[in-house]
Length: 576
Ligand code: ACM
Image (cartoon, rainbow, N blue to C red; front, side, top):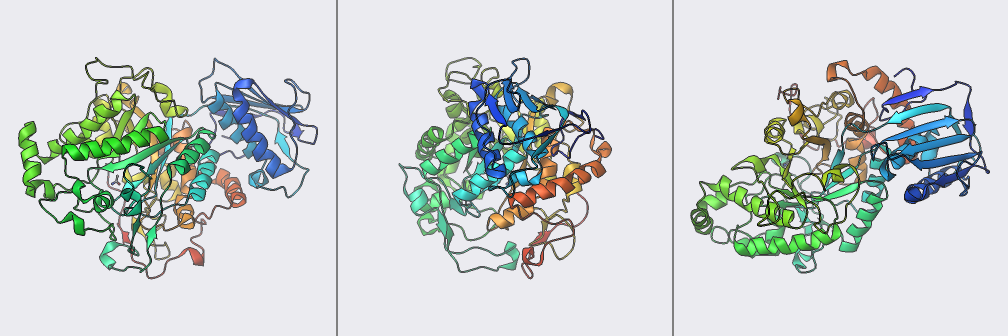
């Protein structure tokens, strides 16, 4: 890494500082031009850099003697780019808009931390070092899950979060839109989902065993137009938004809004409220035809909002007790010839797997969808293995979308309970997003000791996240190719606003971004000292962006939560 000209995060594939003395000093005459297919990236870059520098970056002509230029080269992969700074020119050559956008992010990093401000502190001294950079991501799916159910994240904060993802070349926002504690997406044909389901009377403060609550209603939801705005804003940053509707567990908010969705022969679902506890609610969906039709209706509206190839339908942590007690559920098991409640869940998920495949989409679910038989859609009914194309859905971005026209529409798995589910799924030929909770659940605490606010889970320091490896070594090359990416998950029981999310997400999301983007050696050989050195420059960028990260020496006094009980797990992460 010694020849990286400045301290880039995530590290590029290759970077050389050409001549130490060579610098391109931007000025009022500097032009910004792009080939026509890159007009959106040009607009983004002009807006970002004129805001920060005050320089006009006027549209010039290709080959301008003093200019930044965006070009395409079909020989490069869509997300790959080359950036050359020489003389009074900076040229980004990319395989497509995504590569050009990531190249533009690198160029912004080269300009220094003030390039991240939204108004200029000065109009001179904007210097690009002479360099040649070649870059391309390791994984197509570089994701972050944001749980906007446990605590709602206002739209403006989501848009800001997308900007922070773009800085780190992360390209999938997995929005966890529904859970027991709140339903956050407007569904026009079922208004009670948000009228009733989008708020709760109070919240737990800290871990549930402490039984401590505030007395403050909590809620919020996104209108469909809000979500269209989020999707478009993300697309402008080469980010795909993958929505999650969690089924058939984690559904108490939906059941509260429409009690007939629950197991009415076991509990009086009309007396339920949106859950005010953390944990896993026992109130799960009744798997009737009416429930299937209800969620098809939800998904019809969802597909109109989200163009992503993948739609996440949860499938995690569905307690089966109510199905065991329910005569209706037992009759359903019998009627379908199923062995048990696990197979009932599989049947339910598989229904939506086919339903999505018929519409040109792909289901992704948590690794529990492996239990009782992994959902395997073979595409439009009556057809053989489809190629997944022609489903009418517009591609939502680069990266994870690349396979749409080539691969059969098979369910994919988010492997969260460790690596095992992902290993089994990849060996069975299913695509996998690796997000093992022991490694990349960023709600887990960042350090031992009493200062960490509401300490949860294992200690996952910046260095630990830097040493996370998404592809387990036991996978052979064929199975390893099914690991389409990796994701860090931000569950928000213990983060009640964007400041808390900043604290838990950063700086670790920078390490995660490098794991997801850069081609790093095996964990034991990773150059942590070099990463930490580059982080010094990166903290200055985060400061300019206004990110309230965890300082390396520990939380600021106002970032602590004295007296709020967490649930730390002691000892090292078990071997998985
Ligand atoms: C999960 O953490 N329940 C996916």
